[in-house]
Image (cartoon, rainbow, N blue to C red; front, side, top):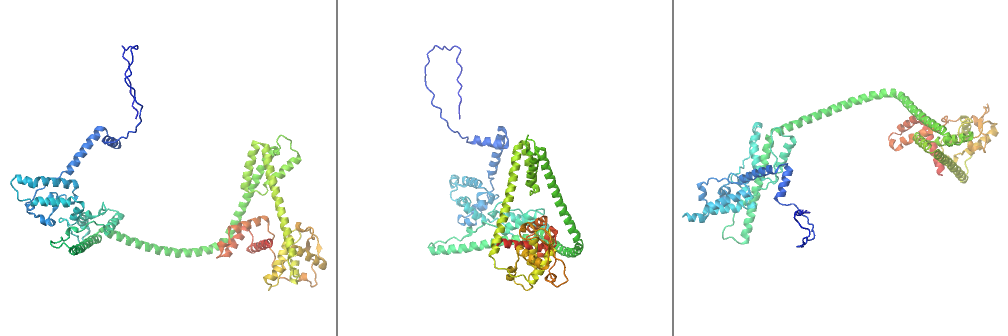
Length: 622
């Protein structure tokens, strides 16, 4: 707290030439923390909380103080003549509240009220006061007052006396009619609520009380936690029996008596709650509601069962109709997939056109330099190579970045295009190197393999049929012919070990075809595939002959599937990921059906293709 001191102004008649005398000096300022406390602070907080003025708060507090004093005042009760005949020795049989003049308050009396009542009685009936009036012999009632104060002034002993209060009504109403229920039981429950350790005690309520509160009320009373005890009724030890054995005997006897009384009181409370629950019209209503709800639930289950049966019949009918419309739905699904692919292609085509226009409008990112035909051709080649394998999302992102770079700096856009182009070229070279390395590894492994079995008659006939089925010009012709011979050239009783030894590579198939060419004068017309340029020209056809020859040997092999396009291969890979085998263990046929629909090929074609791919992977691993 900082105190500001303002000095008075200098008088008008002050003479500056007068001598100045220093009478003293100010000490150094010391800072201290001052905390607000006291009744004034509480009054300030109270006025601020209740939004009162000082005068309003003063008036209200005065009224409250008077009210408290009125409540604490103990009205004087009349003293019946019987009180003056009480014997202090029979204090256990006396009503101590009546002795102190607070019988109307009893267990509701506060400690302050008991104390004031005791003081009044002492002032009125003190032996010294009576001695002054000439009555010196009768002090029994004063002793009763003292005993009453000893008991009611001690909270523990007072509770013991309240437990056996002679005015307490132990009555338990029997089962009654609904209209008398609340009047009969409300008073009884309120009287017994005084003994509860848990306060406040739930109210009995009325006919409008919610079910939750009613159930909570009975749950509370069935688990009633009572502080009522019966030590006050303990039998006192008689004179002359002061040894420990007598004391132990009386303790045991009193303990058993207290336990018995406590048990009887608990049974009384249980009987009270049982009678109330049997008479409570609300519980009867709740029980009836539960019965109706249970019946409604049963009917609901029966209705649900009936509806389920009806639904099952409808499903069977719907299944019959669905089977008829299955083909139509399949065609519709295929059309939707086709439209989706076409839409995707259109969007890609549109985005590519947009990129081409950006390239053209930016002078092919040549800057101010005049673009020659060679420059234009090179830039177009780069942009096409970059966009060739991009998805729609990548293409859109590339278009956006390319346009931003053109707008900001043409040279930066040119460098950006060169980076992407060089990256694509490097990927292609890396892929070619991997393929060359893989082929070299396969050739080296093939050299290490054991010698193949000689060509059987069935294999030769299968080879001739395969040459007819895969005419010259087909993509990967000799790979397909070799796969066909491997799948269909074995004997019916061939085991797995023999089949592996019989596997033919494309080089072996070409070599065998050349031998057949020499024997059967097979005409060579078509050019070989890229992979086997140095091996042999493709065999296109075998002329028919009336003579019996291996070429005429009938085979039981079915016609091979049509070649797979790159688009179909991509769809197959996506479908295999979309419909994993683990998900369709219970019904594999459904999985192949879904995959065939997604690819647009038959289940047989799909299975053969998957088998072919699996064999290729096995060969690569070896």
